Image (cartoon, rainbow, N blue to C red; front, side):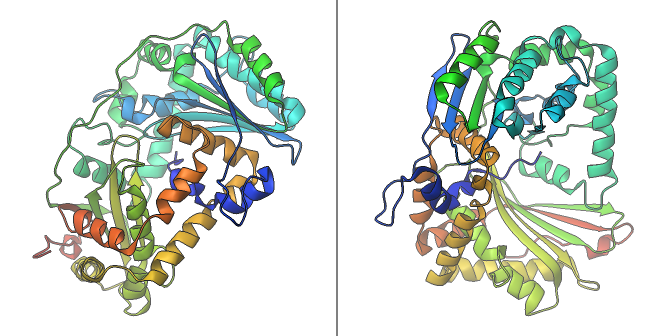
Length: 458
């Protein structure tokens, strides 16, 4: 899942791109990750990035479907299909997909988010024809092999994953509660990626096949090949292997209407030892004008040991064992969250008041120049390790292409963060984090008196 670490990860591209492309210098030459982009007649988009620094290659295919494309009563299909895609296809029956790649020294995996499902393989450069052939086979020739037994098996696997990660995990149901409280009923982000038990149980073989026919089509997919390759050779292979797969139908993507989040207080009892406070606000979609400033605000609040909430709640006063803040902007919409776990004996109202005091101080005074520099340095550095491998670059190229239409968006992404000023952070805190919010308390069973109550003032 969770591949939801978004486009802000591109910000540490500077150092790695200097080393890989020779296209950046100290005088500010724009960063570039050279690519070629081609579209097959059936609609499949191919993006190739040549990097011969090491003899490895990554294929990364994004199907532009996630849990946000589902509908009420039919949730969990995108993630269920991620599992089904590893159950074999006509020319590579289960478990040949994994075995063939392992024999070639390659690995593979997949993930699902609100907005997309991806599948990727990484290995020696000479394994590229195998990687592409396997991906083509399960796109073009998997549906004929899909049967009720496979659906039932993977449905049970997903149900068990839900039990382990949500129902039987301490605090595991919190984000499901938050999603439903932040977003209006029917909003594509009002349910979690894994879906509900009822919807998973109700999914039929025909439902699954219809989902595949709609979304798993060349014209709803983008494949990135990055590594020790030559673009003309890759284009020839992709056309040979994917060209005969027909286009899929046209469909309408969900749209979201503006909404105003009003103060909402929720209490959830769980098998936990310490109460935990979740505060959530309606934010913005990714790449919206305030997106970068909200990322930096989240870092200033809880991104480092010396950040404001960390000092106020964890270091200066023994109120919390941990505190985190993040801006969860996505393709259609977004939210901002602060999560703090109380120390033994601390009431969640106490945590709430301490957090509100820091938010009020940041809204009134704004951040310091040092805080802005530290946030930007950290955001830039966090992406550096991801771009050291072709796998990281391949996924980022796909992410940029889907979000902006330009796979080489590294410099523009960096520019929007470097343009953030203290007044921008102050403004977004005032605009978003001092407005209506969800206050969710997760408390030990039978201890609802520890829950936070509605805030008295802003």
